[in-house]
Length: 147
Image (tube, rainbow, N blue to C red):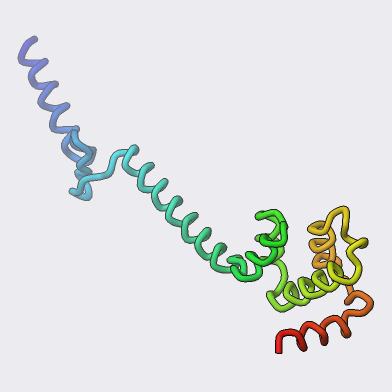
């Protein structure tokens, strides 16, 4: 009976080593170490993380706001996030033009913006306000003062 058990153990041992996997993750057919499921999962997570980081970097590169325009908007009191969104959505030239219009309105028509000047500026950018009345004269005067 003991001999039979010993033979069974040897057969089982031989069967495990031929065509199956060895203990420790060695694949008998391919004779190479196979990564554990935990390692495979970790590798997959790292690849996904790197992929997301690359996507974020490229998205940030595409959406990086014009810093000068962003700062100008923020300096006149526009909220940080709103300033960032606007500088991502519109060209610097377009926002610069609306900032000039805003300065003109502050100077010539302060009653138009007395309640919420930042709101007026943001709305003028989003809704593409036309130059205020008297803008050309005001702008010429500003140019003369600089020279």
